[in-house]
Figure (tube, rainbow, N blue to C red):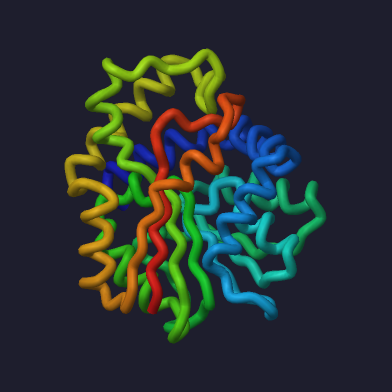
Length: 241
């Protein structure tokens, strides 16, 4: 495994327990219905879907979609995250399969899933173009990738002009962990182009037939400043096979 990936997994291993507790609170908040509303913009209706949550963390999206009747699988590179994802699914009483796996090298057969979803993952991937090619391979014909992310490295470069509100998602993260997160963000960001424009180009090159970007999701999900608030504007990229 590359050194940067070791660094990422080491960081998230230390975040896993607190991250699960925050995601459980988010699941029980009004954010749950807001996330479901975003998914309904893209997901085919009327049938259970086979869904892969890539970089599942503690399983928020996988649990959310399994509770809606879908066949959900979650993968993550951090063993502690997978452990807490299993615990979260048990607490919520939903049936999800979780596997330890690299998002850039997913070990599934071709055309295994109707839908791939991911949240705040692709900014951590040093070879995002490889990941997009692999995710295209995993989707069935007519399948869709739904990626929620942000250009975190660009935002970090401009952080001196953006003061954080008193309440936000990283409020309880120790300063030394914030510093490590910033260092990882800048290191991986050096591999990336401007986002989401760069992502659209890579997705088309990977073979996706149609790609859309929604910059309005940020205002809908984070309409108020609370413990889940993300100060960096996220976007949605939907890519159709």
